[in-house]
Amino acid sequence: MPEPSMPEPSMSAPSTSAPYVHLSATDVLESVAAYGEYGETEIKQLRQSWDGLPVDRFMKGGASYRRRRYSEFQLTDRGLVRAPHGAFRQSLAVNPLHGGVAREFEPVEQEVAESPLLTALVRTLLARLPGSFDSATGGIGIHQIRIVASREAEGLPAPEGIHEDGHHFVAQVLLRRENVEGGVSQVYDREKNPLFRTLLTEPFETVVIDDRRVFHGVSAVEVAEGTPVGVRDMMLVDFFPRRAEQDASDHPESR
Ligand SMILES: [Fe+2]
Image (cartoon, rainbow, N blue to C red; front, side, top):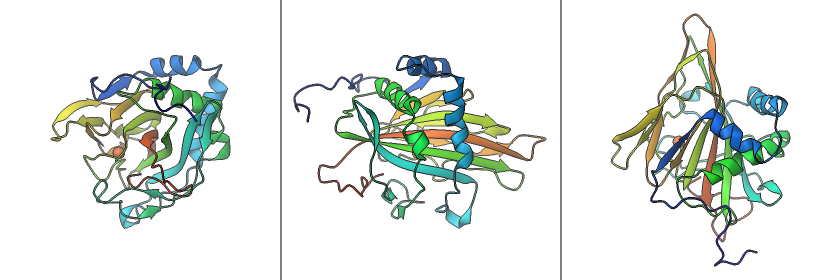
């Protein structure tokens, strides 16, 4: 166990910084490369894992345009260590649309969970958080999410609208954008006034928010003209404190 008074090497900038950061794809990939040699093959394999996501069956109204997997990890010297799989929880206060129920998503596949590239990506994000986070005691949630937009239905990445996730930090990493329009990432202050908006276009382009200082949202994703179907793949990485009494099979109330 680390000494409680010792600062962790993973602690990043103080929270006097802006409550969000926007990282270019080049920036992210260069940082990831600093943690090891990762080529096109590893990157392609990670991105292809989104092809196998099952439908999120907890969507209101039986909507099937969102696919996802979720697993919780802890970051150790050996890399990401998966926590026992359990339900994903958000309070109704944080998520009035889908909160208040235990959502049991399929876990992240083992091959992805054990990928050194995934660990390098999480280390990169950790180093660029807009504030401090103690990874020795904190938990890390990985969501793989695909929004499928078609002629029949647009996709709402965040059907709850302007919202917070109930974590300390959340990284929104774009993995793929094909044949879609929309999906603008938006950040708001605590009064829900717009602070920042951007369209993530390049794989690994990222927005990281301090979820306690800002709200966020994403506009609808529509299929592009002349194509029957489009996809937008995102990896969301949640950084949250673990409760001391947290049971191995449970997750924080807020997520
Ligand atoms: Fe969110």
